[in-house]
Image 1 (spheres, one colour):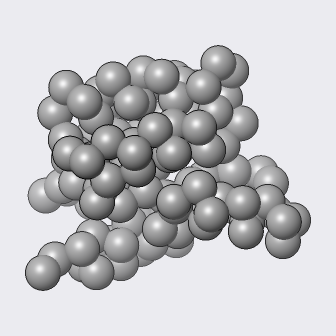
Image 2 (image 1 turned 30 degrees about the horizontal axis):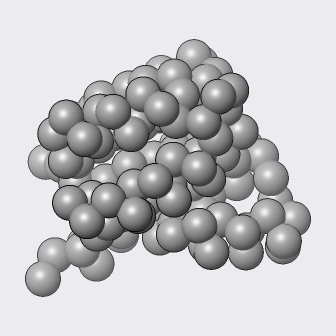
Length: 124
């Protein structure tokens, strides 16, 4: 079981992701924006972070960069979840430090599989 921070400003998506990942046995901390995600990670380092890219205030890209700059959190895997599907958007996501990029609309099962894959690669 992993501790996962999920940040999405859309409550329905946040609840769907939370439900599916809890079903997979994970402990979820769900927040509504990037700043809250960074704060949750600083409070207690998670095993993985799922960030929506487009959120008010601090975007998922900005939160990703902040987490990568923090030595205590720089190695925490990050999955970006977004409606932005253009090649340039995906490249920007990976350049910001993301480990994976999932495009909305998404299959909850696929997201759970991607989370499992990223967590598996993290194990030394």
